[in-house]
Image (cartoon, rainbow, N blue to C red; front, top):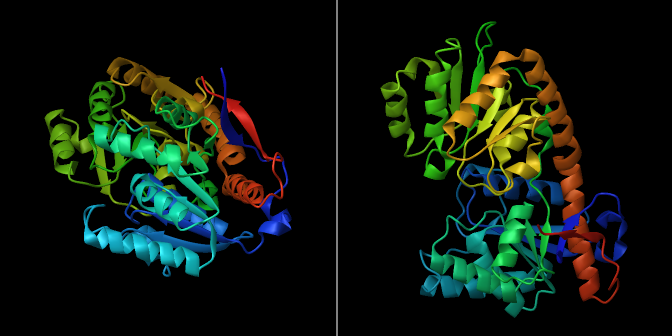
Length: 402
């Protein structure tokens, strides 16, 4: 069945060519700058969009986290723990005044909490274009949070950016009008395609399988990789598992590695800011999550020229081309995970083939230049329609939901 879902394509007029939008105020808002996929995408897109035709302003709910290092002017509008608090009400008023004072034409929220904060505030403040985001599948939200999110996204934004078709389909399931979701995937900055020196010294006989993920959510499912490694190390005793990321689950994972008898073959790197160099140390990139919308870990591994193995969840099948750039396995099926890793560990030529093809796909479909253009097209088209300049001239083509 055909819906109003849209996917931004890169073969049409760029926003920078559309003079009516030059200098229009664009406000991007996120929760925090803590380590995470959404936070990284906010920082990447803020930097990219600052070089375009729009006059960029940024805001957050909590001014903390390393992803704000390059955004010193970001404005904070704190909730003080609750949307019902007096502090939150004052922040809403301050946010509305800020948007009007800065003459913002387009307001775009990037995550769950800023959807709830920015979208109603911007609409009531009279901002011409209001855009929300859906960067998860909603299965990690409570029923009350899902109801609140669905209500806000139904009534307040003009469009909702979804980073995968899976996320867009979830919105339609939640009765968000099908004309609102638009699929724009996560962006890979240029640094992801550079080939830095490996962070870990390479040795001739060692094969490294790596996972980049925070250790504060069980949904990342690190134990599945450790269990698979315990099986594979019997055949590949020189194999190493590299885990980049940190969080409160790390002691539990270290204990599991010890209980499985593989602690000597598992490297816990902790929080890293040199992910391209970490990836340059690996032979295979892995994602074993129970839920993902658009997996940055797989995108970055592909950009680094690695073959990938991913669970078949959310938007992962949109990224991984089965048998071409890597393997997809069913979530919770340890035997499939072991077999996919075994196949790649056994064949250097297959690793190189998958890695090379994955790098080409990553550059063509997820490079920052292409994604920035899709955002600029969305902002420009929506603003021009609101101004009555280009109604019916959308640069975004409709896509089917399956």
